[in-house]
Length: 245
Length: 245
Image (cartoon, rainbow over all chains, first blue to last red; front, side, top):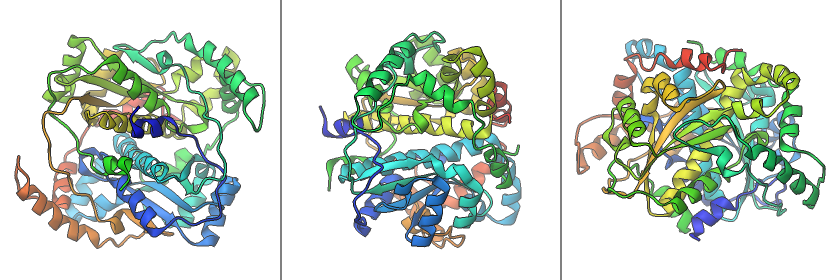
């Protein structure tokens, strides 16, 4: 198999890093790779914030609740950013474009732009032998992250990414059967693969080397989703003038 | 430079394909690569719909308004999907989880999940020598796409992706200067790189082999954003019970 595909399919999240910074050259490759992703209508509607200040890193660790957010080679925060476009325009065009910038389509589009860039950053990092972990956990207190990074209107943090030299080698986590994720021509409501996958996750959680448990996938996600989570995100996004129309 | 990074940084969108289908083995590699991406809390909150029916492909081409949406090796539609999770639960848990599924956080999260999977699909395709183009243009009539693919509640099409054997070799499109996209510790409102980039795009558009024009980046995005676009997306997303809380 092709080396790139092998690497893509060999992904696992790394949550324990060696105490080594990554180099400026590595950071440059990561950002240049992120920027090489497709971007909707050439908008490039995202920004990436690299955290070099130890106090700030600690504060973001507190938001995420996870130690490795502090102890890694480098911490990045990926933001959807429609402010750059807005700021680049004369006042009369700014006024006209607000009808677009503030609706759900542009909130969605900028979230996609940031995500495509991030996945390129992730794969470029892994190609250099580094490990990564996405940090949706920064949305545990999205207002705090916003404040820490001094984000203007039209900019919201989507997730963080911890990147560094791996100090663990976890098992690859199984995925839903292909016929559950991939449908032909029409959406298939009936997905018998889920039952099979529940059994797969039970076997995975029992056989893995750390944190063994007995849990079916559907049970796990159900348990998690019964509790209201991150209920402040809706109002936060609106407070940044996004998703309000 | 590492082969994978070289490939990532060498990306260009392909909009003209040879009249060759891609193989089932290639489709399997693409989907398996998509599934290998990180996924928020193991939710795997997306589905991919492969279009094999020529009539359906033609109908989606009509939505996008672009010929190559019909003439390519294979057409995929990436959907944010919270229906699978909902469907996998007993009734009493379904009722409890709605408070999460229907808020902005989960709309954002599932959009990210679909996007990370898609970027893996894109890079896996390019690693096999195929070309790709993202099709945000399917959101030109998102209600029509929804109807054509028979999507249930909690499932929305985010974008399409045309994949096939390239029949063109376009120039690489320049990107914003790194100090515009990448900030340290705080968001930088002042981004002098934009002016430089405006000059870069003028030179790029004048020197490229097809469709030459004189246009600055800020002028181009400003022109585009003055006209209200895809104003039905907000209500469409809500009609699928997403982003309503």
